[in-house]
Each structure stands twice: as structure tokens, then as C-alpha cells.
Amino acid sequence: MSKLIIIPTPIGNLKDITFRAIEVLKESDLILAEDTRKTGILLNHYNIENKTEAYHKFNEHKKVQSIIERLNSGMQIGLVTDAGTPGISDPGFLLVRECILNNIKVETLPGATAFVPALINSGFPSEKFCFEGFLPQKKGRTKRLKELSDEKRTMIFYESPHRLIKTLKQFEEYFGKDRIISVSRELTKIYEENIRGKAEELINHFNEKIVKGEIVIIVEGVGKKIEGD
Image (cartoon, rainbow, N blue to C red):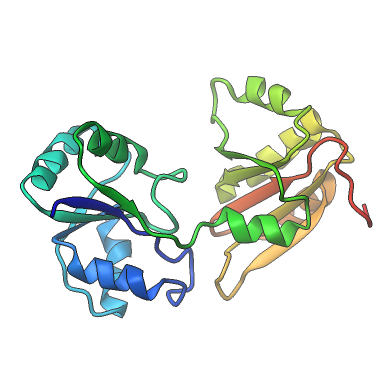
């Protein structure tokens, strides 16, 4: 039966994948991967030899219709990204939406996503939170930061290493010098780091080192001070 299956993959440690995800990868007629080379490392680790095909933000609009056609022909297709759950700041939404419009079954497996461990590690309230993902790089960035300055919920952002300092400086400017921030990087890997403090403290910390890896930034909401702050 034709089906699109969304398959979360490890955010670092290759052991952080479910038995079911491995089983589905082996059963898929085709695996759509954000980067076939990176996915190949995971597949080789688990002796999975199924065919892969590149599907990423630069080609997803061009390829979505051909994928729908193959699904309609009866294929079972798995969708993965470089790390984590497809659709969370990664390709996935467009294809899922098209499948729904074409009455094609979509199944999403539970699994790894970077912001959950970062949120728990932060120690900030997690009963309600605001997931922002990547801020706009240029147009709309300042406007969004101003809008978020009064956000009462814990806020979650993704950021790249080369923009980390810039973003922390902007958080200090728009959210205030006393706002507490938690930065998590290289989650589940050997050099995992979770550090918490005011923006100035974090800027000084990261200015003294070469920053690598995927980064999750957690910012406390307005009026949400916890014991010890």
C-alpha cells in the first residue's frame, strides 16, 4: 500500500534511533534524504542498502509532484533529514501537505528532535513554550525580535555556529541584559555542551572558543524567573 513515512534519525549519537525506525528504513522502497552522504553513514551503520534520493529545501518544490506520482503507483517512501524529525525546521511540510491533498497515507514515527533535550536541560518552565526555530536572517528579523520581547513562554531557537554571537547580542539588546539564556550544542555527541547564563556571560564564553555543531538556544520568558536566577 502506498504510504509516506516520516522517520526521525539521530541528532548525533547513532544509537539514538528506534528499532521501528530501522525496520521501516529497511522496508521502504525509497528513502528520501536531505543529504544522501550523511544518511549513508547511518544506513551503512545498520546495514541498510535501500535506494536513497536527495530531497532538500533547494529541490523539494521541483520534486514533490514526481514523488506523489511514485506514491500513487504503490511505493512506500521514507523521508529522513540529516538529523532529527523531518518537518521541524527541515524539509517535510510541503510533501506531507501534498500527500494529504492527494489522499495518500502519511505515517510519522516518534523519535529524536534537538529542542526537547535542550529544553529539559535548560531548567526553564516547559509546560508551555514557543518554538521559533531559525530567526529570519535579514528581512523581518528585527520585527520578530521586538514581538518576542514580551513573550511570557519559554522560547526555543535554532542557530548556526557562525551566527551564535550575533544572535546572543541581539537577544541582549531586545530581551534585556538580565534575561537568562541556555545554549545547547553538539547534543548526544562526545563534546556536548549545555551552558546557562546572561547573554554577556555566554558571549564571553563562546568568544573564547571555536564553536561547532548544531545549536539550540532556550530563552526564559518574561517574568519567569526560577530559583537561583
